[in-house]
Picture 1: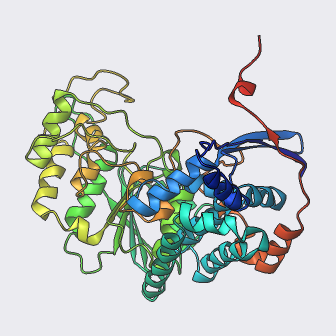
Picture 2: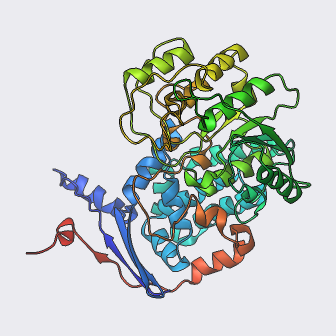
Picture 3: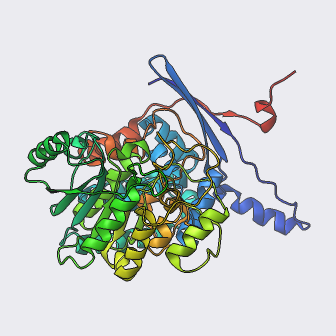
Amino acid sequence: MPGTAKRARCTMRLRRPARAAAAAQLAAVAASQATYPSEFRFGWCVGSQCFDHTLSAAHFQLRVQRYYGEGRRPPLREAFYVATLPLAYQRELLFGCPGLVVFAYLLLAEARLFTHPPVEAAELFSRALSLLEMPEIAGPHMHNLQHSWPLQAAMDRYNSTAQRSRDAAQSPMSLDIVIPHCGEDASWLADRAAIEMLPRHTRVFLYEKCGMSKQAILHFAMLTELLQGQATVIQKQLDDAVDPRTGLPSRRDECTAYLTHVVEHYDDPWLADVTLFLHGDPSDHTPMGLLNVLLRGLALGTLRSVEFLHLGAPRMVHTSNLCQEGIFEMAMRRKPRLPLSTYCCAQFAVARARLRARPREEYERMLRIVDGTVADGCTRIGPAYERYEGQRLSHCYFFEFMWHVVFGEPEDLPLRADDAGLPVVFRLKDNEDALPSTWGSYMAPYVGGQATFGRHGHELWLQGIRDAPGIGAGKQMHFGDMVPKR
């Protein structure tokens, strides 16, 4: 894989000591001083497709320090990028800024504890240790790692998380999947290319919102056969009320199915550890990689600390209007304290304890708000996506902005990347910027690849790092070099 690397050098200026003795002392320690490039710019080609990406070592370091010290957003995306680069590039980065590569593997090791057998996380952790033991990293580089990077905190975090993961793995979690269904092909649940695994104890509830047609019955039978031995499929007919103004049947989207399920199964002794609320075709609004990360963790039993997880990809634009505020007050019996902020499109996971934290009577009241019992009194402004007026109830639409509050989260739901209460594996930066187009889905090189880190083999990887050919001297660049010349 041909490529070149260009580096923008970080420089350090020292004040000249006033005394000759101080100058001599500075000269004595100068040999042990290490400075590092602040940015690395890589370009490479795969066939006719070429990529160009800049990685900031300085920003990576700041985010690592804030993650381990304050629980702030981890540089997880950058860590995946570094660990999946060709070994020649990893070697260049290692000798150019050791902390960048070492902490990429430490972060990935911690993340992998939630989604894979412990041996794979241990392999990534061992890789970080092997890098630290390389003779080229001894001396000033190691001193810098120990004093300018949170090395001990990262080691301690991995070890404590590994112990909790080993304990949790003894008891896999159960799962209920709630799907409002209206003719969608739900066979993706049995497609291992789409869904890599399901927890051992999984129930799938299909709430038929468009009638118990012959097609719906046949689809239920097909899905039951496809999931035999993997999950129990339960089909229920859900009849929404007609619109009080038009007399026409109403499709209340997901809201009536979700709330009906909660009301009917609130006291179910078999209610699962986690209930997953999904659309008939979840990939429209949720990265399947994110869904697979959740399912892997549930199957391994490593996600017991997760009480609520929104699975939307796009973020909703904050909206405030009297209709929304009125519906919120009807549902919650209080006014919103802050503007509602959340992800789009009502797909999320809720732990059993969090679901039962609210009395069932409150869910019953919410169901009456959205099932057509209460007439839609909102004036429509903007796209309605209806075949006829009244087909979609405003009440149901505005629940999209407040499901997280219904299940116990604050009005302003944090970005997953910023939510210190979530395991690191869910804290990948959202669609705020883009890496090369090979990163097509959530954690694609991490979860989706056939060759895992474990199968690659530690010794083969380490030998590759040691023997990787040089890619040429780095070219120092300055900010002015990036500005087009007139």
